[in-house]
Image (cartoon, rainbow, N blue to C red; front, side, top):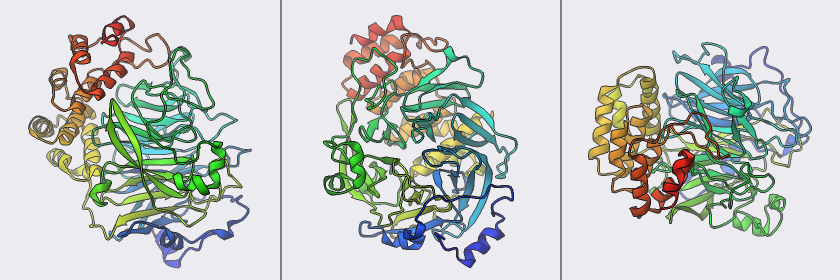
Length: 584
């Protein structure tokens, strides 16, 4: 007995038709000492948070168990990937079990889930879930899967399609595998992978010489171009990433540093493996000016979370990353990166300061300290009302400390400042195109990203969306706020209507982030070559006159960020053209 289930909750579960399917394998707990766990309500009450903040239980076992990842849909519902196949270190994964995707909804706005559905319970080694393009994307190493649900009735239309394969789960390391599906502002689907789980990625049937080597860091896949690329290489175990308001990506990591600016083409330091390109001159170190543990000692020592380790932030392991761009927490939190410190049972806070050619992460006071020794925070993100949701794996070990696996536990906490106002979402899938364009002015980035996803999906389905195009082009040209300009630009590009003429004009824009993104989008179709000296895939020509303009910018542009993006772009150019840009 680890958790008690109220009779009322049991009735809700049964009435909603969400009991475990008859053929769903019985769950086995191998954790030897479950008696020390708090109930979900006790755990929520025991969190130490800043004055004015509150923690409540959004969902707990048996409604949710072993939550490993989350995503949001157009109705403001949260989708949870539940992983039951994760097993003891000697077994790695128990393939006699299956994993599950559930949908949780708070219909009355009281901050707690009261409706639950099972979308699928027939996948294994599930690490991530994302929605879009008329279905559900699941990362189940060695494969990226897509389950169609074109009519949005929460029932799969057909069996899962294998979109990519070639990810690995090596025998000697089973917690660095591929994870982290998230839509980027540019319309690509992004993911992460640990350096100890190298892969060779491609669509099914791709010959090995044509596959993309993946050796840690971030990768991305374009759903219409059917193209995958490795964005970065290195680090140890990235398990969280997000974008700031200017579209710069950041991810968190374990052991050899915790914060990285994810610049395309980067080769980052790695503690235990060899970089795939033997000609790298030097590997890039982390972009934080501090550590969250006493790194003068062995990294494994920080799991003790005492003394200097505790003072610096709680330990080496980080899971989940959120750059807060909601509108419910204090304005001072906007733009800061929050990550769960796994062993320290807290949230670390990073202030992302623009510096030189990139950013520096500076340590802000830690937040959300958990007293529950079972708390294993694994992901976090803000929802439609601006409140932050935290997934708790809820167990006693993991990350080198496994004493067994407790599969019948799991919680989702919601952290708000005071009592949040209920957000009216409706169903954005049914919103008209002009309303979706207007949402690009919303103070909560959640609505902006959901609106972009809807517009991109409709455009890819053949809708012209003339009103949305006109409204977004007007915003891009006339709105004085560079953030809203960027929002409009990204959505136009994700819709496939940001043409070369438009992007070329933006190369001379007064704001550095807009110039930087114009370079990125102009060269987006050119394959990134991060590993070898050979072009991977078919060559794509530089836009006419583009190289001349890039060379001029390299010589004259005073922005370090623009020059950083130009340096990143070198790996997209044909080899014969690289020196001309590299020199300036």
